Length: 237
Image 1 (cartoon, rainbow, N blue to C red):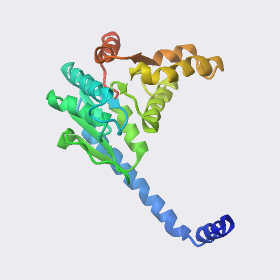
Image 2 (cartoon, rainbow, N blue to C red):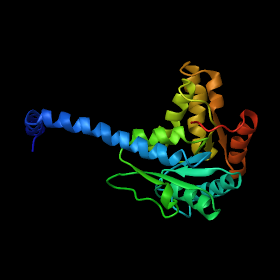
Image 3 (cartoon, rainbow, N blue to C red):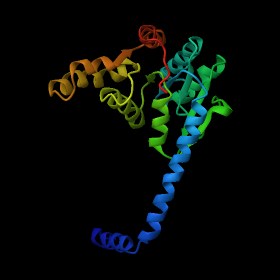
């Protein structure tokens, strides 16, 4: 089929759409989104101080970053924190596994996707929440996390990282520690931020202090601990 014929078919399909029905569906989606906020707020408000661990859903259990994510989660539990992840496989599973095996709170904010994902087996049954909307899920991550541990990941991980940085930078939320784990993975990004972004004056030099780059579980925990020893632990809600 030629590109022109394809364009004609798309145009005809667009013109035939029932816009009244679409508007009605859009209105009902508002209530679906509200219900996700209600469930998320209700469950997470009861959990207490927790730290989110982000990273790729594609990371395998034999990967060094999977093992590192598991170790970080275990140490967070030892310090009294719950662990929040996206509830899926990969780094998310590693975080929940490390928390679960140490007897800590293991929370999963799962997103319903056509190609992935189902909650991993290490999420506490009463602390598993399913979301259809990424924006509702991200609000819950940020509202109920006392810190972000950001492991190597893809677009979704970057989305969550820069969402938090933007909200802190613009003072829409209070500051909390953001830790990138893996200088081998994140070093190039940090160099670009420190040179290109800063040189173009698209950020201020003090904005660089919002991110800490580490390579070990011990150093990741130290960033969290040092921050709250200085500012005293206060939930974000």
